[in-house]
Image (cartoon, rainbow, N blue to C red):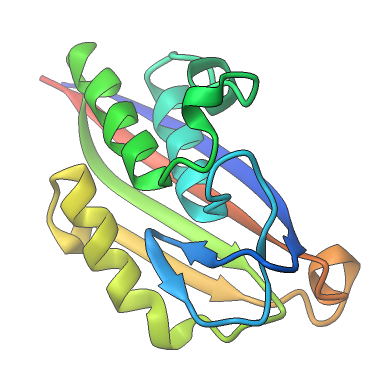
Length: 159
């Protein structure tokens, strides 16, 4: 059995007049995240982890923000296309481990819904998707409530 690990990172700034999408679910908040797509920072980090592990470059290469086909696209669609690309190369997802860094909003009440949503899109068991949330103790752009960052690792296996 062969295994590969990928690391993903993404960041988006807050913006007025946008919905906040994280982990495929809409979260009630006064601001959303700015981006070409729906700016789901967690899904984008997971996509990069999956693509990196499979040596398929990154989300910007595969789904460029210069292409209007991706304007305001639901990031769950990008995640589904990503896992399909990974599987087309003979890889299967073992697990995802992700951390969202946000001073606000409080994410703990939403984590189980995010896990369920992402597992469904990825076609894996919910126990194969781990999501953690943390603050930055008021340090940096996250601590100043200017945006959200996310990190993800993906483990792929090939029999």
